[in-house]
Image (cartoon, rainbow, N blue to C red):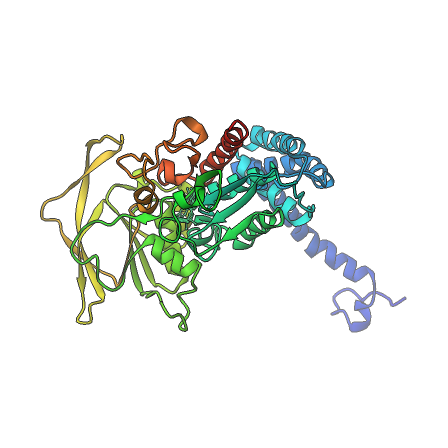
Length: 462
Ligand SMILES: Cc1cc2nc3c(=O)[nH]c(=O)nc-3n(C[C@H](O)[C@H](O)[C@H](O)COP(=O)(O)OP(=O)(O)OC[C@H]3O[C@@H](n4cnc5c(N)ncnc54)[C@H](O)[C@@H]3O)c2cc1C
């Protein structure tokens, strides 16, 4: 062992090799530093543990551990039909009640069943690959018009009961708004396609590019084509416009057209035969979920500035709160309390700006929301090169105008008798947005289910 350095003498290299010297050095310098770090970390940890966010995350993790066995159980139940749109597998009741239990457990804890609902559904989709049961044909045929969630759900339920089902779809792709409207970043198309493929495996036929009312009528389907019942799930895809000058200029789109062209037709590619003009400055007029989808899609297609132009205030936006939050996070600019009154063109007929007028809120109107009133003389110009109108939609008039005796209301929606989708025409049932006007996926699916049950009863009692 090396001897320690003499007092008052600088330690030599040999002295450093003395093990006691480094130990002393550590004790004097590092220990207080470590102590300070430990103290600091525990202080930070204490602060984090006091925060609401920590408790929320801890709750979610805790709930996850308790729900996990249920999820595992579902996966072991190979014949289950968890949250499947079509419910192709057999033991649907058992699987549904397991999922209900899982969701209830989560709901009680964090009040957000959707979070776990989607986790369970995703796990099921990825892990459970049960071969679909193809029921024996019961000798009856049903036609479905429209391959959106209403039509797909009705098709699945009827196929399970042994009906020969054909789905007639106007577009070249089945799925309805799930495929052509909701962007990929919110609903991956592979999920929808998997449901459609499942239906095909169950024997459901899909006839795409078939516009009922043009190529064939409901009377022809129920006459020479031999369908005993028809379900109309044709949605509400007809866009509304404002009726202001300049709405037919190049660079003005309805949200439906803009989204369909980008989702289904890849019209953003330079090779596209019908390209969409993805401008640098885009105004999306309207404040609903569809407006948020259009705005966020425009951003992804290369726009530098995207405005939401909405005539009421932030508090009145009809879009879901989380959709608004996502749009804000991505940098969408909300120009609320203003309304476009005219769209202007450049020399080539393309949009170059819009004139907007400021609004203020008056008394509540029939919808219960405060009525927007124009502020006189408050017009201002907004430089934009693309305008996307997202003002709501209504059902296309094609079916009602080619189906004698089919009752519709003043909004063009098909009138049904109660919740089972029975229309004024014998054997014709309807559901989803075609009946309610623009609503939600889950409502459309519920309507498809109810109508399938009613169609089954109708045919069996004939
Ligand atoms: C951009 C956008 C985002 C949305 N986001 C959400 C959301 O996040 N959550 C939610 O719950 N809801 C959302 N919705 C609403 C929801 O998608 C609809 O309520 C739902 O899709 C309605 O289902 P449906 O089956 O009635 O009609 P659709 O989904 O509209 O399907 C109708 C189908 O019928 C076809 N069709 C129409 N006419 C004919 C004809 N004459 N012959 C043959 N076929 C025809 C159409 O091409 C279409 O494929 C959104 C809607 C849009 C537009």
